[in-house]
Image (cartoon, rainbow, N blue to C red; front, side):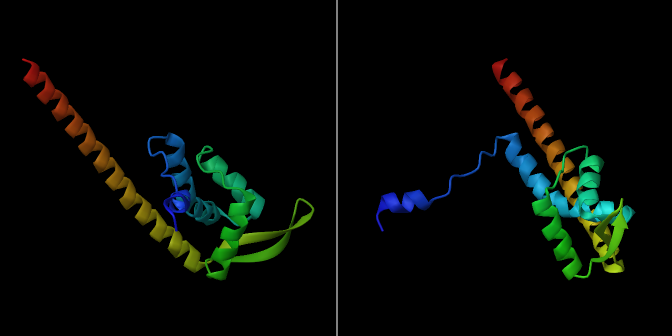
Length: 143
């Protein structure tokens, strides 16, 4: 294999300085959490889940049909959700409800995300402290 062929296969690194990279990563990671979150409140059909997630996150997380329905199927296959056919606004809809296993998974997810949030806040505080120290050092060096 020549170097031109090898280099065409190398994936370009994402732009880690681009906020859209981080927002996309966060949205992907949090989608499952927020689906469990809205279903923790009450049973819903798929489209209602999408609307509730978008509303409860102020648009920060707005999963598409192509994301939500496979996720709901995965949760159901794992025993985290049950579903039933119900008539909603005159239409037959599949309504999803958390099982006890799903409620437990939601609580585990809450704890995991709170731990991650604590680490993020601690990292931010440490970075701010380091930046302040560096600024003070530069100020002393100029004197």
